[in-house]
Structures are given as structure tokens and as C-alpha cells.
Image (cartoon, rainbow, N blue to C red; front, side, top):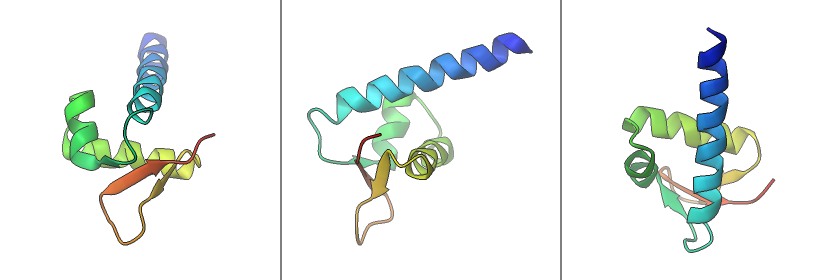
Length: 73
């Protein structure tokens, strides 16, 4: 089971890097776009984005329920 934990950590680090790269050329990201980029189900993409909001890295774009923007560390 340890390999699953490290694999999950590696995937999270990979997603973090992909999002940082994405936000160098984009102002915000839609749940659907993260699902496409990460090859996730929409529900998984939504959970991932909510996790980044909880970490303080993303915020929900005002008056939106599906667009998020990078706010940093």
C-alpha cells in the first residue's frame, strides 16, 4: 500500500506543476478543462480544484461556480 501513497503524492506534485504551467498563460481554469488536462472525471476534477481552494492556492472566480484562478502559495 505504501507505493499507492507515494504514487498519489507524485501525481499530486505532477498536477501542481501542470497547474502552475497552465496559469502562466491562462487567467482562470474551468472544471471541464482540468478534467481534460488531467484525464479526470468531472467529479474528480471538481474535488481536486476544491482541494486547491482549501490549500489557499486557488480561489473561485466571483459570480462563478466552475471557474477558478491561481492565487499562489
